[in-house]
Amino acid sequence: MYYECIPTTCTYCGCGCSVVLQVLDGHLVGVLPGKTNPVNEGSLCIKGWTSHEFVYREKRLKNPLVKKDGVFFETGWEEALDTVAGKLKKIKEESGADSIAALASAKCTNEENYLMQKLMRAAIGTNNIDHCARL
Amino acid sequence: MCSARVSPHFIIRAFQEGADGVLVAGCHIGDCHYLKGNYIAIKRVAILRDLIDFLGISKERLLLEWIAGSEGDKYARVADEFTEKVRSLGPSPIKRIPFREKAVAMVR
Amino acid sequence: MEALKNKVNELLESGGIAGFLGLRNFGSEPFPFLFTRDTAAEVEKITTGAVRYPLSKILIRIAAVYPDAIFGIMCRACDERAIIELFKNTKLRSDKVITIGISCTDDLVQACKCENPQPSNLVSGEAGKKEFDRSDVQKIASMTLEQRFDFWTEQLGKCIKCYGCRNICPVCFCDVCTLEDQPLVKRGEIPPELPSFHLTRAYHMAGRCVDCGLCEEACPVDIPLRTLYRRVRESVKELLDYLPGEERDKVPPIQVLGDGLFEIRD
Image: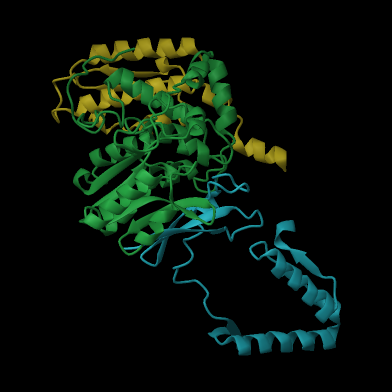
């Protein structure tokens, strides 16, 4: 018998509302809004209230997938990253850096988004970077 | 249909769809085919009347009346009176709420 | 606070309860936690906190997994009222729950202005003052019908349908919710249909609402939900003479086939 609440940040958008994950016997069973947090002051939107539901969903993506002959296959990170890096390099050589664009996500942290634009600007060499919050 | 079958959701739905008044008619107390069904109806309607009144829809728009199956004349009289009453109250304020589609169109 | 700690430790050590649901300081902020014998060291961090979490609702979830265990629960007066209603609705068992009353801080009493901020079994804190104030209901009741309708249309029109009021409500416990019933509530429409969405929820609060105000606290758009449900609570008192959470032995009138109300009262 073990129940505790773990405060964390909602993963759904850039607002950064505080959610409290309810853990019962090692299983995530629900969320509550963080009452003491100045960001959301004890309230959540519908996405925040259901932000725990995807965790145990069967369809949740747990491994990287690589498409071979039109069909997705589960694979390891090494192969997935090699594939992405190889293809990006090839496209850049064939069609130039500006033929590549990246969309960053509000569900990632500030730091991850910073790294994304750094990758695009410094490694690939293009300014084609945008963010889902701007769409 | 037993008056206890008239869920408050039906009444709320009727108002939402633009009904100017809702009349719930049931068997007399003590005369219920299902023994106590009308007791449920009266409690529900009484609370709902208070509630819609607090939300700004006159409680006179919702009426519960005991009309037995054989009381055809009473049914006609009550329906007539209630229709007159509702007519004097005017259209339901719910019809005044700007339609959502219109609001969406304005934003676009 | 010491009295509360001692009481919890005493109950855990004696084996009187399997767990105690209360608030624990996690970092510097209070969050719900279940103190058990295995985690007795955490009792040091117990706090009454200045915030309220729906502890009784959490207890339903835990008790569903451990139906035979006896639990202690830290409760303010509003939690206690909710627990009494949950007993009546068979969501908790009165022989399986021990309530440990804590008093509300003066700030909370001032902010909530509830009818009775005193739990019956007060262990921690002093019995404070009552600041009952129902001027919010009176203010709206004194408006004309038209003003009232416009007021609520404006307020309820802000709704973003987060279901927070339902999710946090300690006496909302159904497995299947009317508000997610597709024929009644259309999916993906914001705001939801006015006023039927809120009217439905308000009606469901009849004979249940314990006036804790968590709904209004959880509302991201500050709809005065508590005022609405307060009015429902009051009409149930006026019409059926039942005040949810206050009367331990009285059967909730809406849930039973009862006599005693023969005429439509105005």
